[in-house]
Image (cartoon, rainbow, N blue to C red; front, top):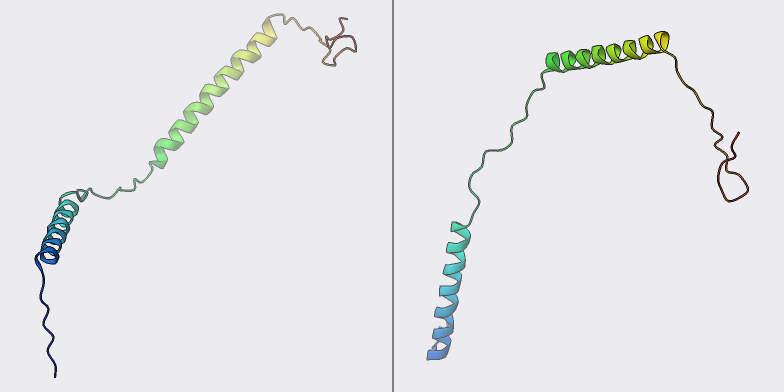
Length: 97
């Protein structure tokens, strides 16, 4: 069996030392810069009772507003004007009735 021996000159030895130092700095930076152990997001169970209550509350509010509109229509006069939505052939303004 033949043994091979390697001899390093000063330049090669200096390059290897510099690479080792840079790799050590990179390893320390990666270790120190790792993100903290933040707990994972937790799923929240929706409160279906509260959701139903909110839906019912909004439905009641809508009904109140509709009752107010109906009462206004029953008791007060409503002014209605009919406007033509078609454009006139003379300049694009609607025709006046």
